[in-house]
Length: 111
Image 1 (cartoon, rainbow, N blue to C red):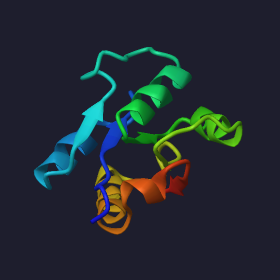
Image 2: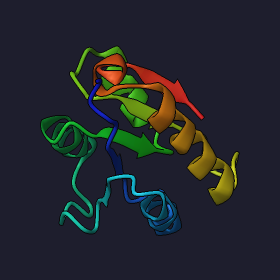
Image 3: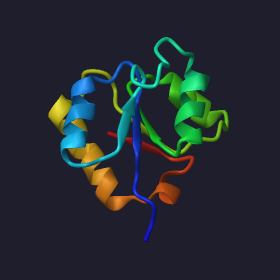
Image 4: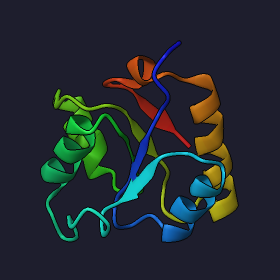
């Protein structure tokens, strides 16, 4: 059985997303919880990768790091303000149901 996705929300993603995912027993961390507030993007992505977590973000700089070839465990990107919290949660739940950890490695999903 493939390893289930785990998520890491960067500091721009509402903490309500983490609370909602946890109600579905989905493993999620936030930047504040792991003491990475104001850490640079490379540090954030490296944390997520080292902990086998898909980074959830509104920050397009992570797409540039992906394009530059920085390894990661997956990026879930959503333009700020383009989705409600509920829609983001539903997309992430769908990803959780459809993808395994290996499938997301070095991949980007647009929400």
